[in-house]
Length: 462
Image (cartoon, rainbow, N blue to C red):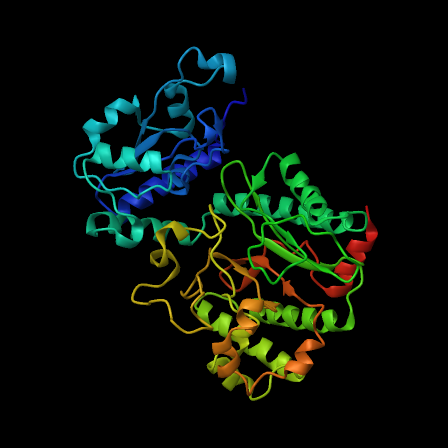
């Protein structure tokens, strides 16, 4: 059995996080890690993933554990493995040994937790079995974050404050994840020349991630149907005229994520129409990053991308009109319907289990506009935040064939011109960006995104 370890640096960081939580809320908090979820019979489970809020303060992905946080101290609650478990899983560390590793002040069997719940707050976990345990032990209904009552909301707000801007240890983990994801994308590009299906390209990419003892941070998107934003099918044959859109990220053993998208031509050479759209998306991508720094509104970065895409589509003859007016009427969203990105950390869409409490600055609510409704983050940028920047262009049949949209935008789309771009189903370019005190650091910069560099990689085959 591999013994879990926490470096001295991480141990110090965990202590600091616990102390900072105590500065933000005086109420004791209990956080659960969650347990295994069975696929089809109890012993056949999905891979375990601990709750990110638990991981942030405990450091290790412990199964069926809980921690109680108060005044900067941590108490661990978990059971020792039964003796017969060693037959199947090898010798496992005891509760006391784990407590020493993570710097817990005390350690108890899980049954002791019920006596420590007075006046405590928590965050509901996604694992339904553990959620029922939360409600039972706390003897109250634990609402999910969007419906949380005042007692739990204070904890949620405190955790958002802590996790929104990353400490040095978190940034080290995010960089490790980004480094592996970059190599995975390079492997996917190089594998394309001999691959017959999307699945083969996916296998080459995920193989790199697994070889580094990491897992994927979300279900990989490797598709010739880039117009399906979260496509998780991999059976399509690769044709020379196709583009592959690969949205693949890695997750470190401690849970920190990366999120990268690249788009490349199966043949190794973009067609003229594909080049036009790719370069437009790249201009939006680069301009957004160039304008990011502390204090800049992320919403303004999204609208900047929308304006650039609208300008480019007017120049290409696909849209008609003044670009600023087109953005105001959300015409750009016919081809760029999602937000410019999201926050990144222990989850690929970090803290989205907390809903807009995490993504939106207090007092702000999600827009009902077609062009803004999918904006996942509406806060001013702060030093220490890591966000994705991922503009795109898509021809989504459900949007372009929608009778209401066709009527609403009938005067601003040149359908004949658009038909000339039929070999562009979807293009997205995504990088992970750390906000520094003076600007940005692109954590995924070692993966080329210039069109000629992409072509060179696809044609290199090694």
